[in-house]
Length: 435
Image (cartoon, rainbow, N blue to C red; front, side, top):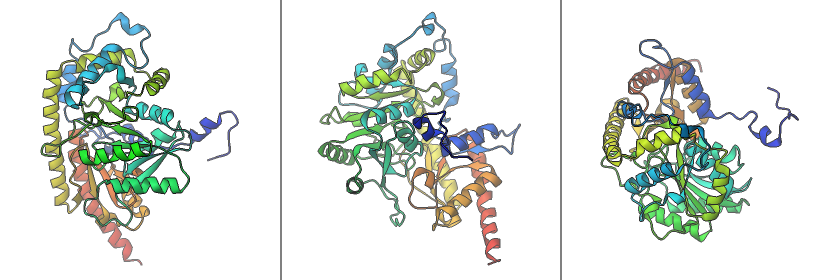
């Protein structure tokens, strides 16, 4: 590949000219040759992408009903870039009902954009300058780096939860780890503008306690940092897990510094509609986001469909109860299956993931060992799960396994994984005989 600068494009475009996003790359690989039990039994099983297919039997009939899928001449007109009023009102009602804020959500404080990715991109653009850093616990959803960096040129600065030499059985985020990462960044001359959290976290599935959240808010207030909290998995916790606490529950926060991201892709399993929302009470930031929203606005038909879908609160309550039950059952089933294979799985509290320790299988010394096992799964088993390095895990040998993909894919994927582990270990034993 010729990496010489192309004078036909801008310096900004040069940054992304050869950008390769790992998660997008392997999503594309799987989509081009997707497994089907009847028509393509040797196709790829995608258990790497964070999708919620647990309740499509409930969602699809509602989406395709005469009350939801309508066509109107109004669809053909220009609308507010940051979201039509009725969509913002519907989202405000949903967030007030289910996130349990200390006061009702005001739709005037909501900015709707084309997915949570767009929300994070614009927040990075508006809150930090090129070269600045935003702190974030790691391991973390790998595209967060891209969301910060690709257009806004803002850097992710890790707060390592799992370190290279970690010996804790179930390490967690602490305020001490936050302080250490901040001090490390400052000592190296970086400008820290914000702290970013996903709660419940991706991939670890942790639900942060109110005590920890308040400690983080206090620390960030002391150092004049913004806090961005992505709560897209807020309603996808497991039965019996610690209670989720939205940042919107706390009344005494700096309203100009705490910004919450939500969306319908995860909890409601409707990723294709691309509806994300930022809640911020910072009027200056609101004005900036409204100006930029026209570059990432949601198509009017998608806004209208989403509004009609969400406006029946009682239906949403029923759906979310079923979704939570199915998530809990599927998580437990997959954990039990993994444990029968002799694998250690983190006891997550929510989300769509199993955080699985494959160090006994692939080794724990180098990321080359992790990559070797990943490629074996891809090439031999046609199975895609995400290696920890791509999620900024400092310790080799961990993988993220998504258990909320198509149910038949998850079952087939577990069978393929079990066979692949056996054959991979045999391969390693044979290779050792020659040395």
